[in-house]
Length: 106
Image 1: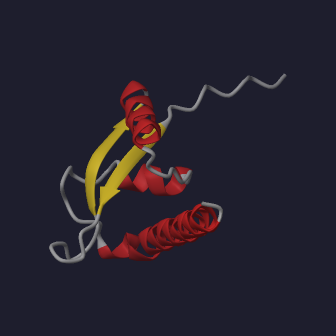
Image 2: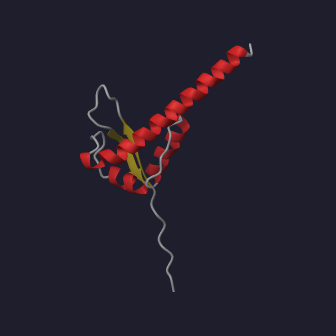
Image 3: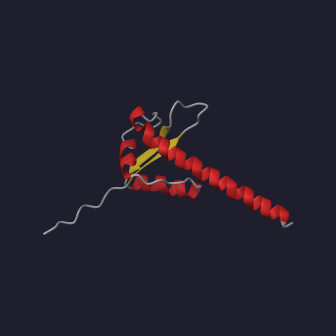
């Protein structure tokens, strides 16, 4: 008889990166359970894109708050940053197209 697996405890981490100040991204929020839910909720409310990666979240919650991401996570975090930059570029294109359409129809 199979036992049901225990429910997973959700984990979340938030990163910040300012290329004029930081050598690498920093962990600015992290948590498990209800704290993770609050991080996710605040990100959604602020319009911050969310990427789900259980393995990366698990690694990031082990890092001290405001500490830089260690080199062994650079590749994974670079993939997240590239995804965010693509989202930003797409949003900029859509905004430019909307502006162009509204100016030609006026």
